[in-house]
Length: 76
Image (cartoon, rainbow, N blue to C red; front, side, top):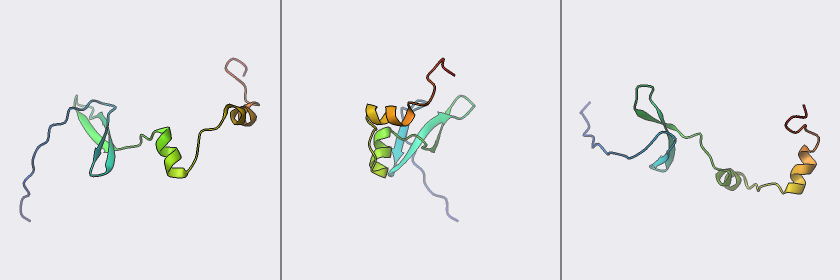
């Protein structure tokens, strides 16, 4: 197999950034050795989730109806 030429691209990224390469999203994470690595993104915004599944945020009235029976902080 012939060797492939690779060009190095420097990115100014920090841990926690989300980058997109060729339409795919990657999370910038620690490589545990002081550097960073790219992993397939598990980060999704609420807007992304609603767009993908056709949903919408619940109203305050809907939230109260669905979750009113759950104990609040300090109640349980």
